[in-house]
Amino acid sequence: MVPLPSLTEDLSVFRAALIGRPLQERLNFMHGLGKREMRRLWHEGLPLSLAEMTADDGVIVPHEGQNDLLPFFDRFEKHIVLRSGKVQGYNVQKFAFVTGPGHFTVRQDGEEVWFDYTIVPDSVPAGWPAVIGNEGGISGLVYGYMIDKVRKVIDGMVVGKVFKHGKPEENYFMLARREP
Image 1 (cartoon, one colour):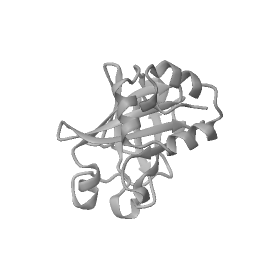
Image 2 (cartoon, rainbow, N blue to C red):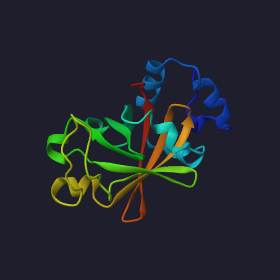
Image 3 (tube, helix red, strand yellow):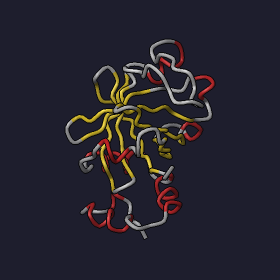
C-alpha cells in the first residue's frame, strides 16, 4: 500500500512504495490526491531534467494529469515533444474547445523543468491543434502569463506548481508519463 505523503514523515518511504507499481496503480493513486498531498510533494520534490519529459526527436510523449481544481476540471493530459532541439507541448482536456489548447514551451531552469505558457511555439507537429496565443479571452484566464514549475516525485511522475505573473498560486498538479 502506498501511504499518503501528508501521513509520511519521510517521503523516501512514500517513494519506495510507489516505485515499481504498474502505471494504472500509479494513476489511480495520483487521481486520489488533493492539494495538501501535492503541495507536500512539490515542496519536497526531487531534481528533474528536461530529458525525463521527452523521448527521441519527433516522438510525442503523453503525460496523464491530475490537478487540485474543481472535479470537472481536474483531469487532463500534457503532450510533450522534442523537435529540432526545442521542447514544446499542449494540453488535452475536455474543455479545450472553450479554453484553447494552451500551447507552451518547455525548458530547464536549475533543477526544475518549466512549462512556459508565455512563449508559444512557432509551429506544431502534424495533428496538433493550431498555435494560438495564451493572452486573450478565456484562454488568457486559464493560461495567460503562466509558468508551471515542475519537480520529480519518482521516475515517470512529476508534480508542478502554477505561477502567474511571476507569483506563486496555490494550485498544484501531477503528471504520470505514459510511454509513446
